[in-house]
Image (cartoon, rainbow, N blue to C red; front, top):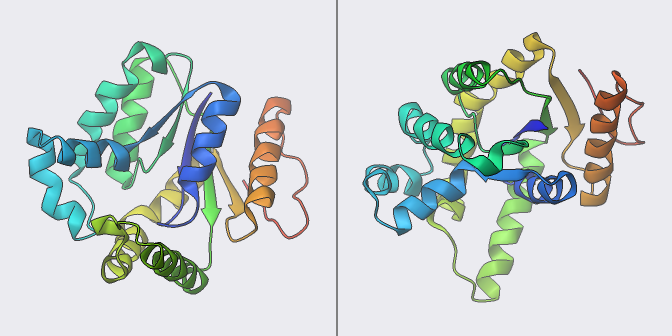
Amino acid sequence: MRLILLGPPGAGKGTQAQRLATQHKIIRLSTGDMLREAVKSATPIGRKVEDIIARGQLAPDSVVVDIVGQRIAEPDAKNGFILDGFPRTVPQAAALDRMLKAKGATLDAVIELRVDEAALIKRIESRIAEMTARGEALRDDDKASVLHTRLKAYRDQTAPLVAYYRDQGVLRTVNGMAPIPDVTAAIDEVLAGLDGGHSRPAHKGERVSR
């Protein structure tokens, strides 16, 4: 199974991606985690993108495509993967299509976690406040001052992916503002629908669309 999760920062992609990876015994590939590890390890790529990430901007397409291409070529990705944070631009999506085609593979689904941006900002600011109150360290890109930059980057560069994948017929949309268990159930229903060649009805309060 090869999946992509789309959604702005704070939409809950990481939580769902980790669960899906465990449930379906596939690997979760988070470009954010890979880039932060590169920064932490001071690799050449890490030094190149350190300031970009700290400002909440997106890493260059060429850098991210190289990282993902190398990773999905490894043996543990053979049975499938879920991409969290990639692709983030249409050129990245086109590059992924080429990589998969070269392997004779295709995407099973692209799941968009649809959110209300104003409510999302309040949710993330509340989370930041709670972490600060507990004395937990914040990542540079989790700070409130960076949040709006990250959301703007998503709107400008990543949101067009919704249309890109809708045109390919692989996009499914669920309500990312619902409680986590409801989002989980909605995603599971989408994937069950794929197995049967069609999507099942959405849960109450949840939207699923092709």
